[in-house]
Amino acid sequence: MRARPLITLALASALALLIAPAARADGDPDYGQARSWICRPGVRGPCGDDLDATVVPADGRLSVEHARRATAPPVDCFYVYPTVSGDPGMNSDMNWSPDAEGLITRQQAARFGSTCRVFAPAYRQITLTAIIDGRSSDTAKQRAADAFAYADVLRAWKHYLAHDNGGRGFLLLGHSQGAGMVERLLHEQIDPDPRLHARLIGAYMPSAAGVSRTTPLCSRYRQIGCVATWASYRADRAPTANALLPSLFGRDPADGTHFPCVNPATLLKPGTDPAASTWLDSYFPARFPFGQYPYFTWQAPGPWVRADHGTVTTAFVRTPRFVTGRCVHREGYSFFEITVHRDPADPRVDDIGGDMTPFAYYVVPTPRNVMGLHMADYDLVQGDLQRLAALQTNAYLGARPKLSPAG
Image 1 (cartoon, rainbow, N blue to C red):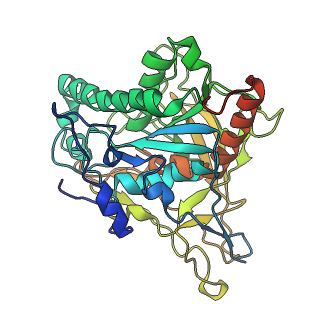
Image 2: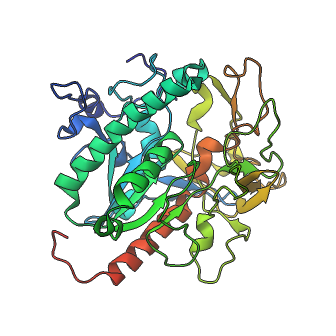
């Protein structure tokens, strides 16, 4: 695979043993082999990395929060990562990179290990290269490439069900292209099977194209078997349907209905208005890894705190009472409106950075509201999602009859 990493960050040498996946005789991935998984129990992958975070409050008094991992999680999480491959073809190969597929899996999914066993298969996704150079704009080719990628995800899902699930409850996690894969699993595999659907605890799939036909949106405290999805844009850079450069995520369907938007933070307390603006429990990569993301420019934050207050040495930062979010319907879009509460007088950084701006696809630089805070969709609500996963899991286990250890 020709590497085009998100960042040039070395991982543990043991991980190198995992990045040449085994294939079956017919050329399809063999999910019976550990190397076809980025994370799964018994595999030393990015979900086993150091996930500690430096807490950066407004007063600049830094503290380190140690990540918690469940010793015997009672449920599972099945995660499908977003578009990150810089391979030259229409679809990627299976040689996943620790600096691309591995990095985004650590950033988005690894913290769910506090509640569940994390299963994250490698798959031959549609590549960034194909999207940027326009190959994916050919409808027939795009559909074929999408079906090719989904076939891998489906193989991984079926292998997981047959060999690992054992009747356990599960959460589905996905983002962008990965959210589309999760959405299709819901439509085709889980919705039609009442016994399987009964084991669905929740599905978190920001920037998905739609929702399941029979799985409802999450709308209340302790609700299980529901979907949460959102598309993040800054309040002062709201999405627009400009004919030349329309915003890509959160567009309402042509039938007059709204694109679904769920703020995960509103689900954590009973009686919270789903449309309320709430403080978000955000976790960001400390050094914001996307500065070298191919074909895109990024606004990177400055140091997270003034130098006289210390230095962030962990891989992540947590920023309490810094960002608020709410679901908004406006001008043909339903989106997660993000406001950063900056204060130039305090020692904390005044912005989160992370605006995703494609330029090669449109030939010339484009406004920051085309993709918004797309790649920060999970970061913005990472802490809220951890609590939501634990809350939904407790509700699910409390509603279930007592099970044997096998499920």
